[in-house]
Amino acid sequence: MNSFGFTTTADEVLAGVDLTGRRALVTGATSGVGVETARALAAHGASVVLGVRNVAAGEKVAAGLPGDVSVGRLDLSSLESVRSFTWDGPLDILVNNAGIMATPELTRTAEGHELQFAVNYLGHFALVLGLHSALASSGQARIVSLSSNAHVFAPFSFDDYDYLFRPYQPIGAYGESKTANVLLAVEADRRWAADGIRANAVHPGAIATGLQQHTGGLQTPVERRKMVQQGAATSVFAAVVDELGGRYLEDCGEAPLLAERPPLFGGGVAPFALDPANAARLWELGEQLVATV
Image (cartoon, rainbow, N blue to C red; front, side, top):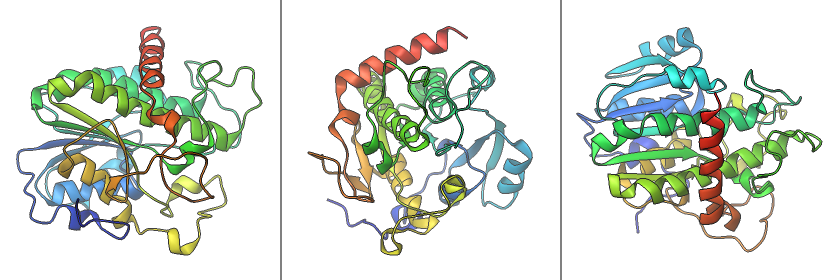
């Protein structure tokens, strides 16, 4: 049992921790929780790469961060971009932080996938596959897959993940993609723990960032909101402190398993998001989709 909780900050999680010699990749680190996650890791000695779509924005962020921080171009909406992303040597920490939320209109990528599914899940899945050797070379690698309590809104739809038949629902599609993020961590941990790679999904909490640009801003009650420094705490906890895997974490600890959907803005994890059969099936689907490009 640790002493961390809802109000813990990333720097408090890493107090006394020296990450010198560790190498980290944080996706979507041009704003919000991604920037704070990268800052905290770099401030404690890690060499950090910001994997971002907008390189100019990434370089501006990197210039303002402490320590060894560089930028790599990575557009998660494009499997071709993910495939062209290169990494040399071991990778100790991969934080799949990038994401979009509730895009109001049904939008498809150039490869034909619904945009939230493509960015939040499929691009990260392809990245994880491509970096397996680098992660295994670490011998003590951690994969952190950012999810959300919105995953409780929707199990992943294996039959229509691209909304080819269903009416498009912005929040529903977001919830499905966040369920998929949890399943990615569950299966990555099962497959790769023997390679020294552990994976967890995390819910950072409710933080006012650009993520809510399509929802009219943050709707969470004030008492349930976090500052960005607190929002990054569970990510760095999973990346550095935690020793187990295959779980869903919130407030720097394992979330309780739910029996039913909680009240709005509640915590916990839905059983369908941790189901090993769902996780294995989604991994196989991801492999098929990545292989077609």
